[in-house]
Image (cartoon, rainbow, N blue to C red; front, top):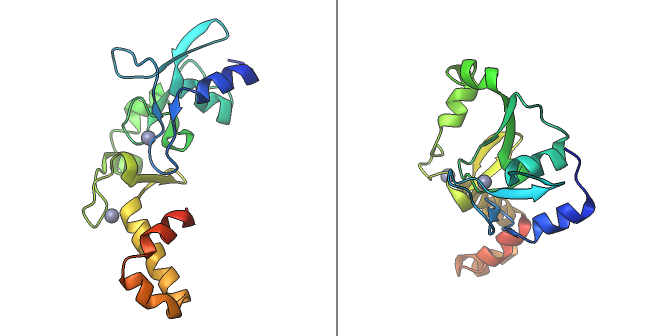
Length: 161
Ligand SMILES: [Zn+2]
Ligand SMILES: [Zn+2]
């Protein structure tokens, strides 16, 4: 499906974008919970539309999946095209199925909304990433230790991303 500049501008005006985590659709959401968007005279799901804007056309036999399981999320990095065949055969077993079943990080934080960051198709826990970033930053800025201990680091670390 081709999309015009105008379609894309209209698209983004309907998205409640958060820098991290899910980009939630603030317009029409269909019965199944998927965001719906009309472009080029056709109504399709918004996540499928934006996936194709970023990654090129997706065939009819493929389905655009949410890594985050939030159906009205339109963050392109949370989306993955899966052919229907793959969905049935591969997903049932092996590493990718394992990965897509994961609901918590190894430290027990739940992968939901704001706490999910997708890097190279893998899930990352935002709480753990922030903690790691904070520790790294602290090692590189030993003089600021006292300020960090007073809790000022939270503003700093959110800008790192
Ligand atoms: Zn998402
Ligand atoms: Zn975690």
